[in-house]
Image (tube, rainbow, N blue to C red; front, side):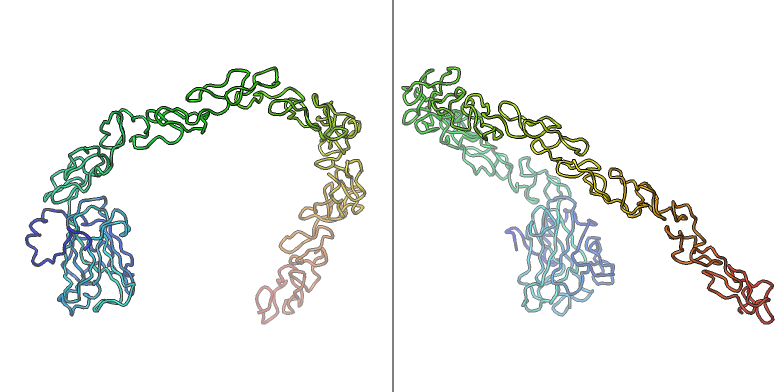
Length: 602
């Protein structure tokens, strides 16, 4: 058994138990049920175990759930609909209406079974109410009552045959053949007692209590006692009063629920519960003050007074090292004087650096060094342009290039590109025919996105050669032009029209269906099923319609022939032998003696 207060009873010999539990309701009756392996194509579903019927204990009585054969596990469960208080569980196994003893075939199926109560559909999440480890075929009781004083939503019946060898008498496979499983307890959460009329104590955890005596199964935080009616005391708080209060201001009792100190913490501690010493860098009441980062050891001070240990760092003074050196002074003990800062500003009180930088042409911590070659301006932070006549060389104060600019650049510092449409040395050259009249590259004049229609080359100054047209001359003139491969270099329009079978300005579109030839002016003949003829020569690709022949299907069938492509012969049994309708083959003038049908072939 899984619980100290759980016990197993047979129906026989439990009259004292029965008188106690008769008042409880069957919580499982007609509730939703499920089984792992239903028996296929039989009316033995999971719901049979909670239908309230258990007078017929065999397969064909229609009152039992029966699981599938040859399975290594068997699981059945009922959903009570919500978490309810349970007292005991009644199980009636299948007997096939045969005496229940060691000779009953079905006793072997149920040996080793378990019963769980869970708040989820997983038995592993719940409470193990019972697991058979001792029964034999001769001793397993049926029906069975299992006392399991607990709370839960799902009652799960489980058996397995997954770890052979099995004890003597065990069936080789697992089953959950149950004729009825009843779960007795209180139908309304938060109540207990024989008639479920007594409300659980108010401070019970989740409002749940023992279904028999009403003792809380646990208290909400801050309370203790069987009825959870006593607040935590003696410097204790929280769940089951297991936590100790921290160091509250003036030794006050902390909150019995969450351990917080109502009036804050004493000096040197912090947190809602005042149970943490000030970390390095903090001091005072509730550790709300920061040790000065200017202490000899930055951020380290007495956690009560905040006094720096080991004096102050350079640039600071006072016990807590929170006051700067006077203007014009810096360094250890504030004994050093500032250098030459921009606009004669005061330097930094710690290291003497100029807070807003140096004058143009100077750099260094104290602004005493001239800019090196390639740099200029305030603090020497700007780079001379690589577009200078001598790349990277300029005046250290103004940045003006010496020797002018390189190709594609202009202005004193050579940092501005040539205007749109210009490129080269001194920006004196003009761009070629770039696509959509875009500006060319300011240095070499190349068109970044290619050439406009009709032009090619690096700078888009070359007209397309014969046979090519369009942007960057990338398109080929159509071979269907009147002069194959010759067209307008901009639009691709064919000069001299199109060859037979083609149309449109670029001669890339075939004649419409039903047309062919030069300028698509000729009409197709009688092609089969009214198909379009070949767009160039008018030939019917799949042959002629009935009654016609010839390359273009324009010739009627000669006398004696009929049908598609005139391939069939008129019957010699016609009234006039070999003479018939050129389309249908119907004999004109009827048939000769002895023959019938329209074509006189029967």
